[in-house]
Image 1 (cartoon, rainbow, N blue to C red):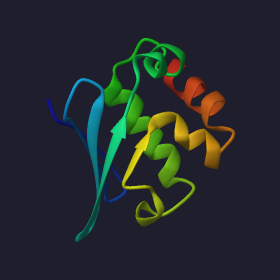
Image 2: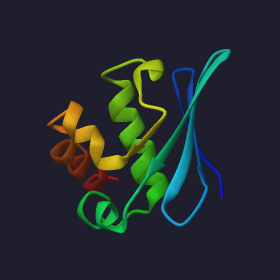
Image 3: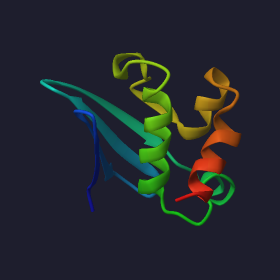
Length: 100
C-alpha cells in the first residue's frame, strides 16, 4: 500500500519494502529524493501512539522538512537516528501523533 501526503507542493510517498523497511519519496516540483527507513516495532509503540508506520513516517518527514531541505535527509537510516540530529524529535513526534 502506498500512502501520499501533499502540502505546499511537497508530496511524501511511503512504500513498504520489507517487514520493517520503507521507501519514502519526497517530491517538490520537478525534484525528488528517495530515502529507505527502518521502522522497528518498538518505534511504533513508543512514537506511533497507536498509528501505523505510514502515518509515523509521514509525520516524521514533515518534522524533518520543517528543519532541513529534502536533500539533507539521509538516504538510508533507522527512524530513531533523527533524534541524534534533532533531540526534540521524540517528544515532538509523540505529541504530533497523539493529536492525529
